[in-house]
Length: 324
Ligand code: ADP
Ligand code: MG
Image (cartoon, rainbow, N blue to C red):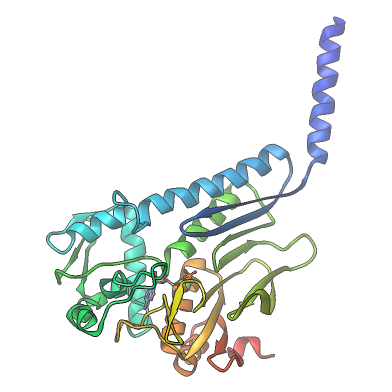
């Protein structure tokens, strides 16, 4: 055997050995989908760790390109431009997410409704702009999930009212988190966390201890109202602080009642804990609109889901599953 071969074999061996010792936490954050993305994984090697982080960020970006209302070429924008006139052929992924949204509209008696955007797009929170009463009145008819017609055979969507617009802001981040978690699980990740804004899902625990997921104080971004120890679960929070402006002491925020086209004020924050980020995301928005009594009542009737609500007097309320 020549000496060079032995040398390189030894080098490889040492390399493999030290790589296997490199099992550790890897994390990354980025601004995508108009929100903060955070990923943390326990990986066996730097290669696995880096690949996991990059895979999640790429998935977030892919969904942003598909579902952003701010990108003219997104599938969502194309649907909004055309589905009021004719059926539009859409991707399986978009079809399934719209279908889920409609089912959640039925479950929540219309509190969650992606056609809220028919009026919702008239708000610009960054510019402190809102529609006046006449504008809201002229568009309010267009808010109704029953205007959405999905054709399973042709994989098309059409709107039966010309002024309907849809927006997936109340469910797309949860969907993106669920997809990311599946990708990580397929890579063999056993301990991990993915967060997109208020939507978090976990794989396993934090190696011997639970993950600690915070619910922020709606009136103080540096303070947590509650922290939840969780593992192998997910939690989404909707609050009146994510996007809003104030006018004459009134807070105009981004969660709108489909009945009025205006912000709702019964609660300040809703967190839903359950296995699916997609459902948590949509249900947190729905409970925010439904308000404390009706919203908590609904969650108490859904198996496997729990809620933490802060009402407009800043009092905390918990679903029956969290009260032991
Ligand atoms: P975020 O993490 O942005 O706070 P939420 O889960 O709280 O997300 O959802 C708020 C978003 O949901 C809004 O920005 C808007 O895009 C959308 N939305 C607002 N009202 C409704 C509604 N009644 N039904 C469905 N989606 C809604
Ligand atoms: Mg939500």
